[in-house]
Length: 233
Ligand SMILES: *Cc1c(COP(=O)(O)O)cnc(C)c1O
Image (tube, rainbow, N blue to C red; front, side, top):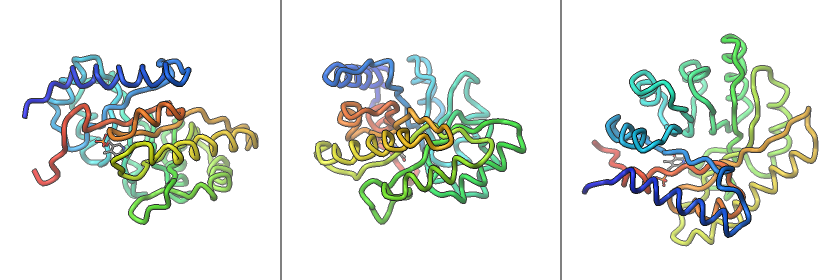
């Protein structure tokens, strides 16, 4: 199957723009992250040559290898589950870690950031639908967890992230996007140690349009740009 990556990116951007217009938002407030996990460097370069500079990856080894090989002006986002023993490989190299799902992981990132004299931009991952196979804190624990993590040095909590359930009708996820947005508003209203969060990373190929309508500032789109993934290459 031939994949026209430039055209796919154009279409996704158009959909984001239209969702913004429908919901009274400025398209400039939504960042498209091209999720390139399992995809070869040539495909990332196709996206790069179409103007894409923001990529999302899930696996540390693959991410580090792509960082070392591809152009320096790419902004890398770690969006996959991160083990504490892998933190040292990415702090200082990625623009943002979206998948901070425990205080323990945040502590490890903090330690590494302090050691390297950098500030790590992080998002707190929330398991909005309480799915058993997904990582993330609960909505209920959101304020408590953010308060704990906000005490750690070397971190900048930029906002919240979620992967909503895999559904055929994206309308089914609208309530979860609203819940995440509400948690963000609630946290900001508490003025926790001057925490102000403005990033909402939500929406994937199946539901990014709905997510943008509900306030997403970052959407993570893989399949709609690069085509389906083949994990057993
Ligand atoms: C793979 C992945 C995506 C992209 O999924 P698509 O359905 O291919 O758009 C987004 N976010 C996370 C956390 C992922 O693991």
